[in-house]
Amino acid sequence: MRGVLHSLALILALACSAPVMGQQTGKALQEFVVPADAHVTEVVLGALTEITVTAPHLADDRPWRAWLSVPDADQPVEILDLSGRLKQRIPARDARAGAWTRYFDSRDVYFTAPGEAEVRIISWREIAIMTQTPVNGLNLVPVKGHSMDLDLQDLTRAVGFLSIHYGDTDETDGAPKRFVHCTTFMISTTIAVTAAHCVEYGLDGKFAELVLGYTDLGKPNGAGRFGVRLAHMSRTHDLAFLELDRPADVPAVFTIADTAPVPGQELLVLQHYGAEAMSISDDDDCRLTDGVFDGRLINDKGKIVPRIKDLAWGHGCDTTKSSSGSPVLDRDTLEVVLVHQRGYDDRDGTVKPENRGINTHELAILVTDVLERRGG
Image 1 (spheres, one colour):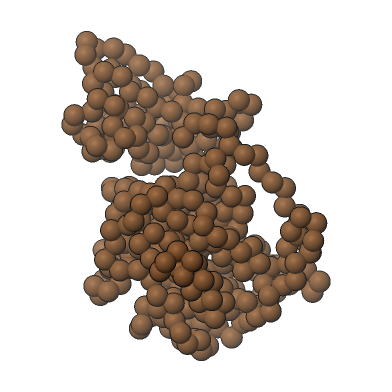
Image 2: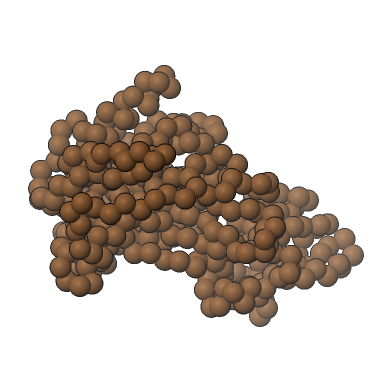
């Protein structure tokens, strides 16, 4: 994870020629990161080392997590709070490879390691940006324990939780850095789709990880962790394609609908709400609306690129932090009809609470092109 990362490019914000009041660009949930050195205490106990990790004061009372490595782990690493209550058990294989802990609400935790161990960085949720005011209340349900048919269960293993670390992991300037989180979905065993604004600054030199099938907080590795690289991005479409570092062993991948949905059509969304384990939105408001929107107006190296007309369609499914890039599915066929893009802030009451997603036709063209160039 260490290394010098590219500095972020500064993207110009362009005002709409016909502004929509209350419109808010979809943004990912962010986490801030600090080096763990000053927050780790080690006590050598013969062949063992007891390591205590304390949450930074900057995190206040926010849930926090740490990245740790126990190279000589031959049994699960148990993390406890100071009262001795078990907070997490990390399998030995994951501890040897290096892994994130779950989020802790305890100020201090400790674990015992054979030989040496390393706690490298600590992060916490610093910025949580809602991408919409939920339609008639927030009706997201955790996938774990939710009743669903086998076809949909199979597809949950092809939904990915994307984490990207922007900034210098060596912390040369001493300032907190950030993670950005989004949702992705697999269209082949090696290619995932997400929103371009999640990866707008590229992935070269950055820590980027995709966890598939993350449905259980107690199993943070889900159906597998993967490194990813940027295979193709269209900022005007707000779509990006990521290539995994190895094929994913998934029982099914997503297909794109070959017909356009119609207003009122029942939908569902699989997503990583607030950087948590996977949730599903499939209540009665989760339908296609009659909203049609032009695409993004962007500045590409000083040249203003025209909008794509009628690129995005409206939907009423509840989506919030880190939902960008989620697959919006036809509830009956389970085909992708939209890629969730952004939502609205209607605090002034002038905007209909409605999300938007990239439409089927534009999505299908890009998906076909990317898959053909990579041999299907």
